[in-house]
Image 1 (cartoon, helix red, strand yellow):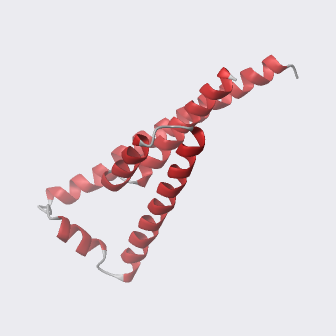
Image 2 (cartoon, rainbow, N blue to C red):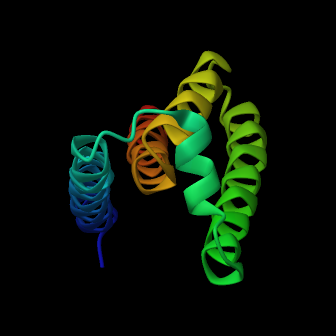
Length: 126
């Protein structure tokens, strides 16, 4: 295989991955708010009520604990990866804010989308 063909293949892979990550980020932004909107329509506006209902039993508490731990792992990974790639740490604040307000289902694929684009740009420049 010639180097130009490999490069074109890598570019296509990067584009396809970026497209998938972007679609996942969009779905991840919309899906939680659809569910949350239904919850808010019932008149539940209090953050206290939201978390007390989320921690009502051991099953739901397991999901909350898993999600919070997964978010913490993602934030650590993003911190290290942004530093490794030389990307501004302001993005870390954006991913943390997005993760805590919208959800990991949006912030993680958005991070992967941005990271893939940065890595593709770096590969093209080198």
